[in-house]
Image (cartoon, rainbow, N blue to C red):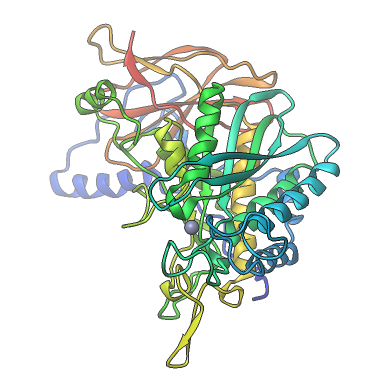
Length: 481
Ligand SMILES: [Zn+2]
């Protein structure tokens, strides 16, 4: 379909103030008692607590320019080219030059090498391979190859963000590696997204490192992404955010319902990697809605719901859909914040289906059922997120809520980041029943602060700010001394 540039006003988040004013009116009318004044604060006075309402981060001029360069025609051409390999099943031919996963791998590699050659040395590309021994859905030793393009950061190269799409495909029988499996939506759409972002983002320097990885073996059991995550773990890489873009090709449901301005982001609460000690802390003081993945999801809404993307991000508070999974789980297992982008409605006639016509109805994951304007907008969402993450300071480390004695104040500590353009920190807070941060208090370039609010009654977070006003994702402090 053609692109549609119309959009509503920039979304704003409801603040606690709005809810409180309504509640205050009701309470006053009912019992006619004066409202008790809230305590004074580190960040200024307010009627309902310290700080000011949280506002979304607007895209800067450079980000708008970057998003304007994302090219729908290129995205469509990539999806159609990948579908034309016939099948990209992980067990299909590795060396047929025309049909099978090997031909697709080589084509993606060649395209990415072209982007690297035009990047002034910023982007590098490798094919990362290993032999998967027989295991679930892998009957014989099988080479699994990821095409990994790395855009190295200029000032914080050790801080890494990853986006993946899987280039393997399947049809009805997950072990059938000979029948056509065009995999246009699942997941040539995600591969097109990351390839186009690699091309556009590598034209300019960015501060932290971003990795664009086309992975294989997803349909067999997340093999490629698991290997990728394990390699990063073994190297001690500081992964601060990861996204799997998997099935982002269409917004049309099987009943014809369309929702072309919305994308889902699945983000877990209780971490997949949670240890018994962490579980005990969570049981004691809460935080099941404050995992690193939930903070990352809030950051996505913060930077990507605006007129530059034309999209709403519908965050879903679960790891993935029922009966489904994707490559973000490989990164969650290693303890890194991660989420999965996927289209708002699905049409299961065009996923994991043999290409066939039954009673006049076409089945199969064919490019004709993709909406290339939609894929382009989801690509813009991910571009806004990855650029904003890379240009902002990293998430504060060792964020601690001090619990050495009982007090009605709250003392917070964290480590200072090493970014050369770091300007300072902000403390965020919200009612424990709120799902989004509502208040922000600027606290300056410090690493400890005391807030005149009881930690028993609200949730706190800490984020870093740079000199251009880019904000990091929020760190949720852990109890300590
Ligand atoms: Zn998939």
